[in-house]
Length: 78
Image (cartoon, rainbow, N blue to C red; front, top):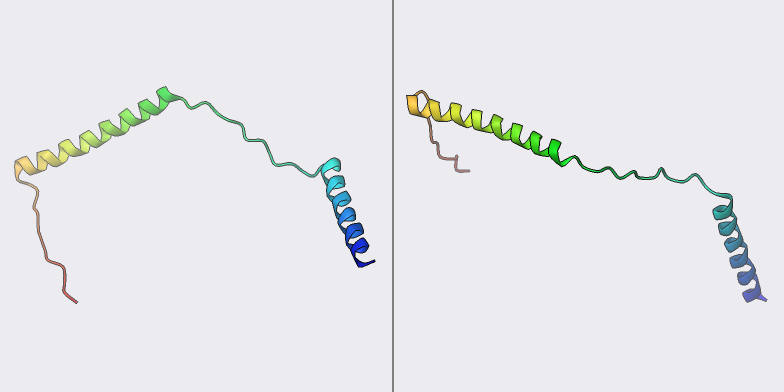
């Protein structure tokens, strides 16, 4: 008798799950794949490289003119 109650309980749960799938729950929005624009990515990378080169040129000019000062310190011992 006890096992038949479990079978009925499981059957009811399965019917509820099936009804939920059939009626339809709000689905998640679909992911829309986008094709990457390789040309725009390369242009962005080139622009960043140009900016980096400009900064490096400025640093090199500072060191060549002697305007840059470097100070080395040892870490404190605790």
